[in-house]
Length: 420
Image (cartoon, rainbow, N blue to C red; front, side, top):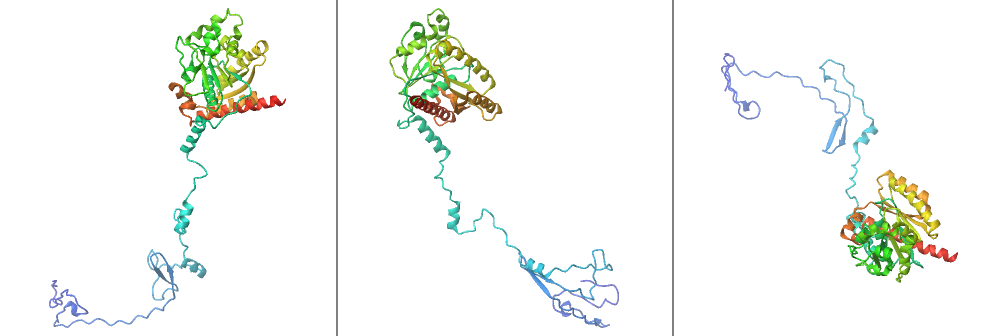
């Protein structure tokens, strides 16, 4: 309750009781009378202006279009008295366009068709291509050939191939072992002669080659026949191997005083009674008497070339030595096959070396290229070839393709030679 100190309002009491009109305020009568409100003139009604509506997301919004009321002052944001701002009138056609806003575009992930059509569109058939694991398993079965149904063409006569390159570490032993295994798994009778004193080919084929085992040294020095030192490779029925022991390291010195020292290996092969489709001779990384014996005994030379610059320098010296052997000791000797190994597709140098090799040797270079693959390097540590260690790897597939190409070229060459 509030009281005023003046006499005019001392008699009036105001309470805040709710009600309607003056009664709700509870004004008690005063002796001076209640002041009456002054009469005001009624304000003229504003003319009704046409309205337009526009549909929005929240509902319908109504807009009044028309001239401003004459008795209502128009102001600005800076205060009254300023000149009124004229609002541009919208074009009726534009207003009609604004009335119906375009519907939102459906999201690509939301299917607009019926559920059956959506399921049909979302279903992707995998009948045309197998998953990677199935493809690798299919390649492994094709390479291992457990049923023996897949065969490579056999040559009409024995092919003796010398795997040579005076540059070390280019893949001579790996190439000889894996191509021999690939051919043997597909119906060919293959013999591998390890002519390297290190005995790496014997290790890769899991053939005993410790001191005291009959080896190729007995053929070169003592004149033993090849069949007397040949061993069957375990797990591969059509593959045999002639091991090399540490005794072979001194064979070059002992051969200096032997008559016809360059043809000792050739005589041992001819003395053997076994019939083979392929004989691969793994040479040491040198151009000594052991390599010369291999070049004299063979009719074809397989040169593995690493895709690096140093390997190209070694090829020039090897080709010169092959020409000397051909002119003096073995007129039938020919470079029939060149295989690119350790190809790294990430480097430009590998592409340049491949181009140079193909331009120099032409059709003698195989289309198959052996890439750098860790499985190829791991296989010898388990005394296996990469064909049996991991038949689905890229290295195994590449050597399998190279063996196929060698077999097909041999069969085609024999047909051409027979027709001629």
